[in-house]
Each structure stands twice: as C-alpha cells, then as structure tokens.
Image (cartoon, rainbow, N blue to C red; front, top):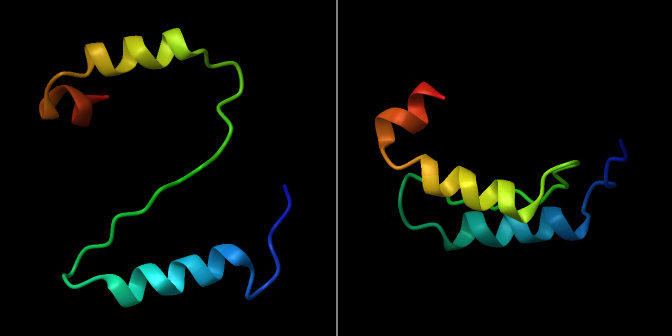
Length: 58
C-alpha cells in the first residue's frame, strides 16, 4: 500500500475542508477500490439497509 508524501494534494484538500467546516462535525469522502464488488452488489446493499438499526447491526 502506497502512502502519499506530506503536503500531497489530499492534505491540501483536507486543509480546505477543515477551514470550511463551520460546525463540530466534518463530512469526509473516502475513495478506495472495492475489489470483487459489482455495481449490482452495491445496489443490493443500499436497497437492503433501510433502517438505522439494521445498519448499526451490520
């Protein structure tokens, strides 16, 4: 697994997100490869995780 060097583009983006955040929470987007997962599988996931309780249970 490669790690980006300090002051990489992702670090700059995070700095901007932190500056823009007005509240106590920060929304993050995690972008990574899901090996072996198809779009159909992702559709199934979102169709079947329909309640907060069910999501927490998972």
